[in-house]
Image 1: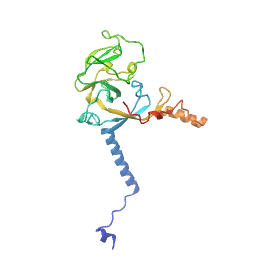
Image 2: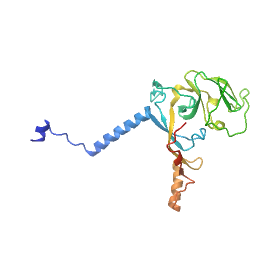
Image 3: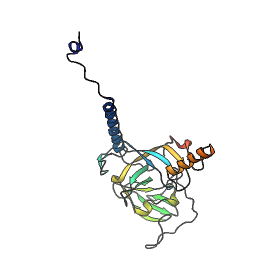
Image 4: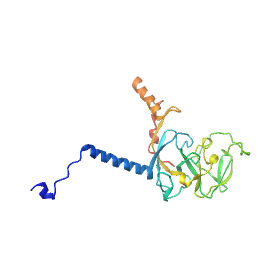
Length: 242
């Protein structure tokens, strides 16, 4: 019995290897883009505004599904799946510059009355303590008068508008946050940060590649990796963000 008699037709010709691998690569790229647009996205930490929770050189994953399925081009919510809770660490489009993404902690929810008095945060006239927050500058900046001063340590009461959030960095004396530029609209949220998947440390101001090249140079010329130029923070990898 021939192949044609057994199957009703001859078997389809085998695809050339380049086409088989090309199709597999195309599908993988599409799946990666879909995951990045709707489910999870990677971000890196460029500043110390969230120390000690997040350090410069941390790479983290953000759950984009946490606060809604969004239009990948406009970031508008298509299907709501939840709203931020107080204490969530969120990534969002910076309201004053849509080309930048910021990461801060949610402090005030819609309708909350927020005030800062001598570095202490009050929500609806009750003291609110964030366990992760630090203040390392003993100087207390007084309440701003007119257009002078800074709201860092003393901020008049503000009420969080509907569909908006008041966000602050954990490194309170070194964070440019809602105290200075206002509220984060719901439509600006990217998602909730949930895990650190990689972390490295190098000289201040150097990029990953510059620091890595410095460590590699030590290996080439001195037969040992120069950890002063580049080192992996193994203890931070896999750390859940709270």
